[in-house]
Length: 128
Image 1 (cartoon, one colour):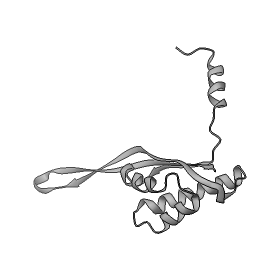
Image 2 (spheres, helix red, strand yellow; image 1 turned 120 degrees about the vertical axis):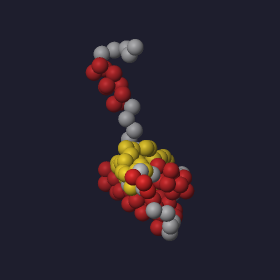
Image 3 (spheres, one colour; image 1 turned 45 degrees about the vertical axis):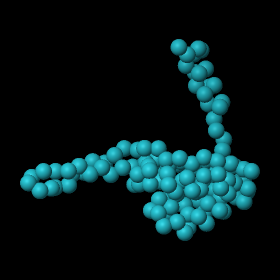
Image 4 (tube, helix red, strand yellow; image 1 turned 180 degrees about the horizontal axis):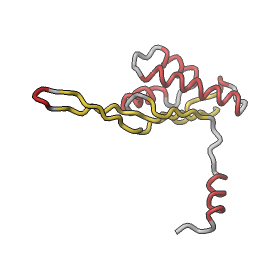
C-alpha cells in the first residue's frame, strides 16, 4: 500500500522526472523487431556517427529513426540549449504498439489473418 496522500505521491513522482532530451514516435508502421535491428546499431554512438550510419543503412526503419533522431537533436538544441556535437544516444528502444488485423482471402472460402504490427519508438540523448 502506498504511503501518503495521492497529491503527495504525485509530487514525489514528478520530482524524479528525466530531464534528458528525447523524442518519441508513436504508432510507427514498422514491427518492433525490425526497428530494434536499426536501434541496436546506433545505441551508445555519437549523434553524428549515428546519422551517418542511418543515412546509408538499407533497412526500412533507418529512414524513420533518422527523422526521429533529428527531432531529438532539435529538442536538445532548442529546449535545453545543448551543443549537438556533444550529444550521444543514451537510450533507444521500440515498444510494441497495437496490431491492425486484416484478412487475406484464400482458397476454398478460407481466410487467413494478416497482422500489421505497429511500434512506439523512443530515443533519449545525453551529453558527454
